[in-house]
Amino acid sequence: MDQRMTLYRELQNSGVSFYTWDLGPTPAVSMEVGGRYAIFMDFANIPTAAQEQVILAHEAGHVRTGSTHAAYSPYDLVQRHEQQADRWAYKRLLPYESLCPAIHSGIRDPWELADHFDVTQDFLQDALTYYHDTQGLDFNDCPAPCPAASKKIRRFGGFFCFRLP
Image (cartoon, rainbow, N blue to C red; front, side):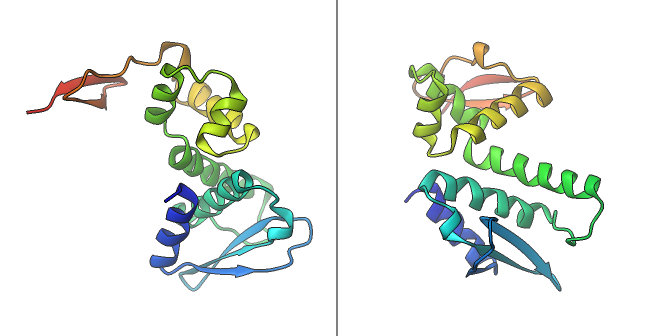
């Protein structure tokens, strides 16, 4: 099952309601009312599966981080909430631990990575910028894959391979 369907199912199982709605030029909106969340999506504004996955993950980021706001909220609050939703989506769809093996396998061009993870190129570029600029992670120095019968664990700012018993 792909990530998009898994995410729909997880959100629905946690009580999030989904609605198809004409949102004008906006592809999706998430709302919280009385502790219950709903995501409204306008599929007329979501032409590809990659865009749907990115938009869904972003809206899920609002729900999972509780970063919803009123339409009349101050700009700085809106921006902070949008960043929180984006960061959640980056970590969900493009975890650093998944990007490095893809890069090691020879997938280097942004369009190839975006296609591999079924995300948009803009989302991929934004995620790479986030990991590099705010997390200090460098994709030129991706750790090599661990040998068979071991597990990679991220600790103390680095990756370590541990032999499995």
